View 1 (spheres, rainbow, N blue to C red):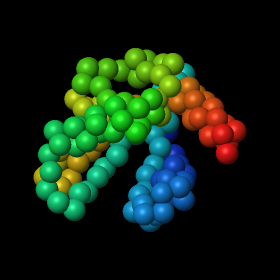
View 2: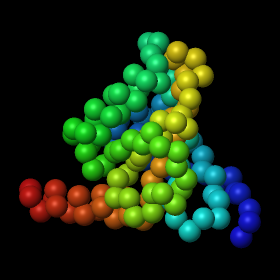
View 3: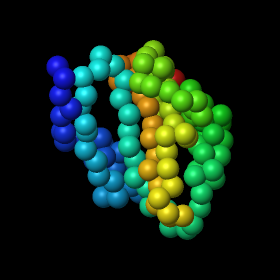
Length: 132
């Protein structure tokens, strides 16, 4: 129980299925670590136009307070995985852990509770279906 295990993931392919404009533009892998819960996404992003990590943060903050409230979040605190146990949001952008490599190339880190976030999205989907 003390190994870090590189593994494949279907997450990037799934995103492309749900958001067709991203189909074929994402790839990824998983790094399995022996913790009971909570994972982190290390997203490498190349933008078309030069920007800054601060501008990306402001965009994520705006969306997390608007249309994606309760689904996406942001933290500027120094955090560890257990800080997100029981968090119902699907993605919490970690501003302090993210970095700008160039004005068009970024590493964005986002935390999520493997079970809670997923369960809440299932409930959201059921509520959506019941309204239709």
